[in-house]
Length: 115
Length: 116
Image 1 (cartoon, each protein chain N blue to C red):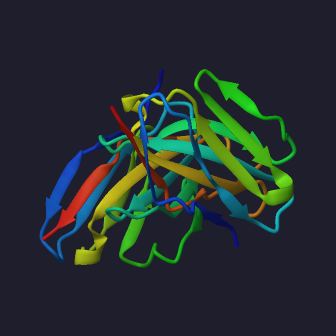
Image 2: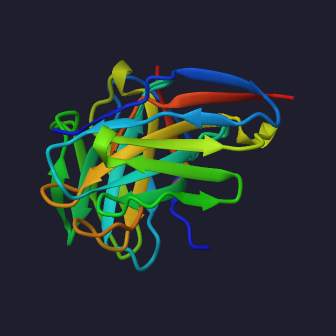
């Protein structure tokens, strides 16, 4: 069985500060995919990034960056120079390649950016 | 950019009534999913559907639930006799390929189901 843990339930930072959202996962499978989704107050789920288990390169996209460390089973997400529009719930999710297709989500981190 | 669309955005139903939630997946996608999110909780997998049959379902997806692709574009979730605990946001998702593929599942905006 797979498990995703997002230990930070809620985080508040002042605008323009950097913030890191933690994600730790568990799986016995050696091949899997990791994802981050954003859920703004309007409720929809917005895909942000995916990462393959065999690709440990970190990725940067504008103000967003992701740090994947297989050794610690972590896939952390950093927002630099945060903005009020970043306020949302962020979910980390895992899908194994073989055996099933479902996404296993973490419990989410509610991020509030204070103007 | 193509989207997954869900209707209605909000459904209010009396307990015990049947409800059908509708989804139009992205047109060339082949794999379809339903998830639910009870208010303030995490998103939970319900069922996946491919080639006109269920490919996987969770323990939540009991006999009260069914899915159908009645035509070439719609994908529906039916709850036969709703219970109070069925109140949740229901998300439909689709992807071009399943299993050994890293394409993300694209989610609709969700249907908020309220059972009275």
